[in-house]
Amino acid sequence: MSMRNPVELSVERCPDGFLRHPEDWNEDLARKLASEWSGLNFTQEHLTLLHFMRSYYSSHHITPDVREATNFIARNGMDKKEAKKHLFKLFPHGYMQQGCQIAGMRRPTSWCVG
Image (cartoon, rainbow, N blue to C red; front, side, top):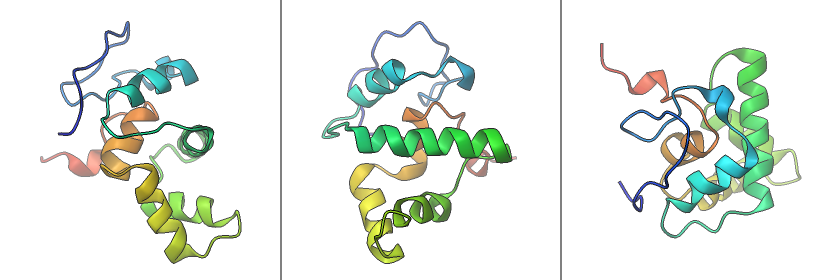
């Protein structure tokens, strides 16, 4: 994993760094979580996407996948292929790993092995 040492936070996290209680999330926490990732220049554009992710989760009760995040980015006039490339520029360590962690999501269940 390409994280720095975890920041001291007053929230409970799993060993992989995901929040155990997504309702603990706020923008200040997102900035602290983002600071753990080397090479990530956290911007307002990240926050806009994180708010989309959280709103999507609230409405659908699942974490938006790459396709949904790409469609959100494409709404701003970018074609879908370019939007997907842009998504991975925003989260170079992976949308599901880095993006979902900073958004305060629980670890995506598709990663769980039963």
